[in-house]
Figure 1 (cartoon, rainbow, N blue to C red):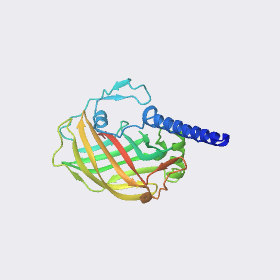
Figure 2 (figure 1 turned 180 degrees about the vertical axis):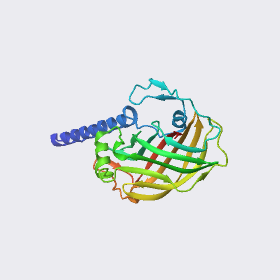
Figure 3 (figure 1 turned 90 degrees about the vertical axis):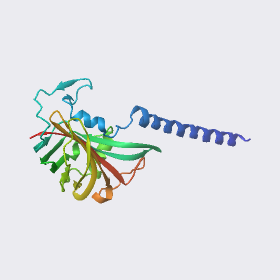
Figure 4 (figure 1 turned 30 degrees about the vertical axis):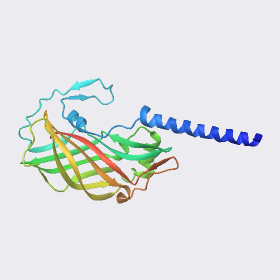
Length: 247
């Protein structure tokens, strides 16, 4: 074997080792060190109707107890308003340097209302200031608020219920029910009809609502945000857990 061939083999081996180290580093970062937040689930729904709430910005074990007397859950008829316990965000599948992961961004800057008449939810709206949605990456956030969502032009995203949700009867405190919500999602200046499953429970004078709305970027005139290092699919998920108290 000539000296040139030996150097060529060594170069190939070193290149392969380098690629392996980079891939392994990305794998460790995305799957262990900086694993994406889990999707909102029943535990989050239970948490928003709990009388003990975590103080935003404090350590996870710092809590306050809401001293406001909880109204009865027996008759939820009337108007309800979204509280600071509400959270809305996005979830998008990503391929980062060859590793499958997810981009997740969230905000607690949520406003909304819910109206109950009889045993039906007749009106529901919620909206967010899109620029307040943040992830674990400032670079992603800059792209999200800038060329992807163009928040300077389209600052708000919102949902409005267009068909009443007839429940027949309301669940006992602490019990969870599921239903289909039909309404309009407005995002990036485009409004589309949507239909999706929601879970809800009422407890301690709080109505909690959990759900997710699947979207295609093209339906909302959103360009695919892929770049040379990060590749995304053509769709994503708007996920939320909302807490409502009587207005």
